[in-house]
Length: 256
Image 1 (cartoon, rainbow, N blue to C red):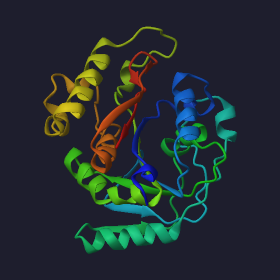
Image 2 (cartoon, helix red, strand yellow):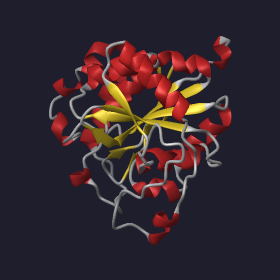
Image 3 (cartoon, rainbow, N blue to C red):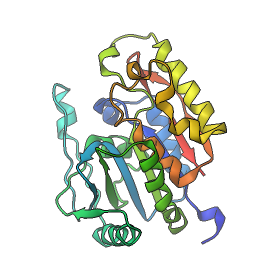
């Protein structure tokens, strides 16, 4: 495999479930990226919406599309993303991680949550790339996610796309669905964090030193997939930057 064929790792801010049916600058960026990247033979993805007691890897050969939300347009509940799983890859990853002392198991019944299928509908609309989903253990912090990403970094040389799916800022209490305004605190945080990703990874991993971070991420599950992608790639570049619904940062980063 040549360096030219090595895929990046990605962090995708997936926003609200409505991303799946939107046409926006975010969805346009996803579509362009799917068109421009070499086509992966599989996707390994960590979503903020699969929290688990221990590390699990989905080995479901045909994961269903899970509409894991309520109160949205009925159109959303009709959407399907019929990508297959890849049990052989899941089993292989579980064996490799276990051999390195990382406790994990496969999950043969896991379905695809919207953190997986909402962005992938725009990235790969044909749903023709197999998906292996990685859980986010509740006891993992930024360092643990970073180390896990580093363990899987070699997959990038095997035409496997590594994705972390969450949100660069995520305070649902601050959402304003119809507002055109931008939450300055959220904007300032993501600018600060991007600067650390570029220049000082240890400080990025220690992101909770940021003043008032709890008003940006009252819980950490939407930011932690960023560090999973970072561990697999290191060198950051911005694919897309925007805000939605006042406080949701919709940034997309690639790590090479």
